Every structure is written in structure tokens, then in C-alpha cells.
Length: 289
Ligand SMILES: [Zn+2]
Image 1 (cartoon, rainbow, N blue to C red):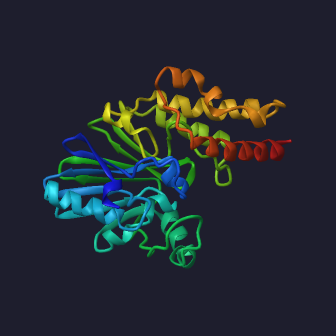
Image 2: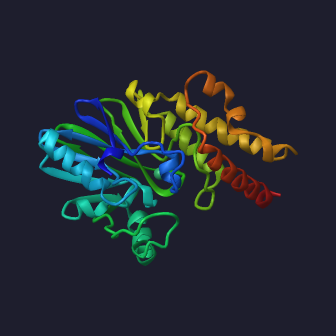
């Protein structure tokens, strides 16, 4: 499994661990691809999420111990989705920070997760956050200030990680390249769009999502144009829903300008997410009418 993880040293204090994009894999998260980030300095590390297969969180921990002499780990669980919490066990003896809702959901689904009966994920031991909060929490990795903040996008209690001095934002699943997963069950489309606008108003120069093209990470990350691309995608989906051709409109067609501008990169397995999103948007339109 270790060979599946690719490491990108973004800055001397910031590393990306990618589980790669495997178009033929049986797991959706392996097909879409993704990864986690760690902020580290002077023997301390704040790891954001524990990846998508058992053992991968441990791999990251061992890597940081070996290469950066990290002795003190803190884990942040950005939200409860399994591709972000599966190997929290590797950090069971550490402070694990998360939103109150993330802990509640993990405990609620504990039996299903541990039986391997949830989606296409391997069974795993549930280790929920042991330090929970709502809205906002400030913490430090040595002298690097880190602000965890809740955004009502994609999932309730979803945390973004801001390094205000460096103007770096680790978005987790708040933003995705090339497009994001819709769920309007916990917050309306209007609320989620307003939250993305609130994010855009922050002083941020570099954005790092979980699920994205690793090439863009290697080139230094995304800019706020990714926020605009995600906002436009939802607006265009809602506008197109009444179109009789809606079912056959490809995402790559809908996102043509952003793809041509290199803001996002097309990756074919996202056609599955696009089809799922169409159903969510149709449900939304039906509810409103
Ligand atoms: Zn995810």
C-alpha cells in the first residue's frame, strides 16, 4: 500500500500525501483520487485527515516521524466522511480535533463502519475526535498559527484549515477539482453558495483541496479562481435543470471555460459525481416547485 502514496513537499512546513487516482479501482474515492496534508515544524505536526484505506494514516505518521523527526502529532478530522477518517486509529494516542457533529456521526455509524457495511470501504476501527468544537478554533504548530473554521459546504461541520500568515487555505472537501459533490440535505444551495462567497472574502492566496489534480499541487496550489469555478458549477447546474437536455449535458461542456483556462483539470471518474449531482439538483428543483 505504501507505494500508493505520493508525497509532495509544498513548503518546508507543508506536505501533501496523495493516494493517487486509480480510474479502474473498485472504490469511488480511489477512482476520484485524493490526499491529506500535514503542517509540521520543529518536531510537531498537525495532520489533516487520515486518508481512505486502513494503514494509510499510519504510513503518513511514520513518514513524518522518519523524515521530519516529528514526535508530537495532532490530527484534525475535517468531516466524518470515511475517506477522511478511516485511519484515525493511528492517532488514537494523540489529540484528535474535530467538529462536534463529526464526533456524533462517527459514533452513530460506528457499528456499520466497523462491520465494513458502509459503501465500498474496508472495515475500520472508529476513533472519533477527542477535542470537539463548533464554528472556530485557533491552534499553533510551533510558531505557525492555524485557524480551523466551519463552512456549511458539502457536509455539516466541515472544517477548513487556514494559515493566516502564509495565506494558505487547506480546503479538504469544501472545494474540489474539477467539481464538487452536492448535498443539500443539511444546508440549502443558497446557504452553501453564501458560504463559498464568505470563503472568497478571506485573505487567501493558495488553496489546497483533498480531491484534485496533483500536478496543480506540484505547481504551488490553486487560487481563488477554484472557488469561482465551484460556485459557477452549482449555478450552471441549477440554471440548466429545466433544460430538456439536462440529463445529457456533460460536466466538461459545462466547465469548458474553466478547463480551458487551466483553473481545473478534467478527470473522467468525475462524470459519476456529475451524474449524482444532477439527481440532487432535480430533487432541489422539485422541492421548490
Ligand atoms: Zn472526500
